[in-house]
Structures are given as C-alpha cells and as structure tokens.
Image (tube, rainbow, N blue to C red; front, side, top):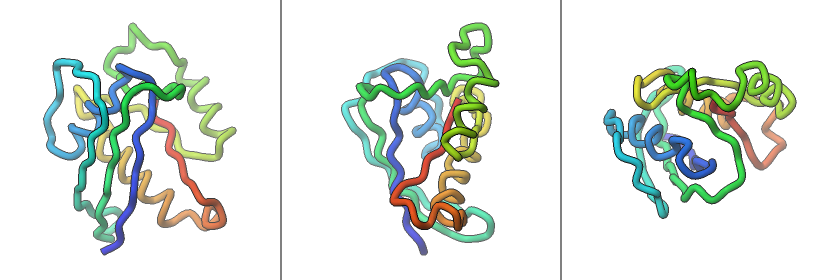
Length: 133
C-alpha cells in the first residue's frame, strides 16, 4: 500500500484543522481552537488503489490564502474566478470545500493523492499542490 505525506498549510482560522478532522474522523469542529501541530493517518482508496495518507496539520502562521469555507458564501474573501485563475497559473487543481457541510472534503484529499501519484508531468518536480478555496 502506497503512503503519501500531506502537509496542510494556510493562515490561522481558515479551516485547516476543520477540513482535516472532517476527513479523518467525519466530525465537524464547531469551536475554533488554534492548532499547534497535529498528525493524522488515514487509509483511503483513490481510483481503486488503496493508500495511506500521513497528514500534518500545521499551525496557522503561514502566509498562504486557503479559504475552505464555501458554506459561508456571504463572507467570501477570494472570488471563485480569482482562485481558479491562480490554480491554473500554478498548474494545480482547484476545489471549493466546506468542512461544516462536508462538501468536497474527500475529493480534496483524493485529488492530492492523484496529483502525487498519477500526474506524469509532475513526476520531475519534488512537490505537488492542490488549491482549496
């Protein structure tokens, strides 16, 4: 079974932990509790291939704009077209997600695996990315 290491990056309060915990345990974290650093491990199947994800949920001090909360449309800070354009510039997928509603949660992590596993154009790179808006 293939193992993949995933690091979840983003500014504080954008929903990194909520998205990760929803994916790993199926629970939504109602209360915001700033993360120091958490590590998770989950077995999944992506495109009929079993794999293990080792997920590092980082503290929100990085300067990346990851805006997970698609259920809060009225509070949107990043326009859909802006996110889509940025993902095209970076050459990576674009997925809108909501940990609260469990919208695209599994799809985000499955797409990360696909990017690391099945993208021949990225084989020569030492990294992969997945934009989550």
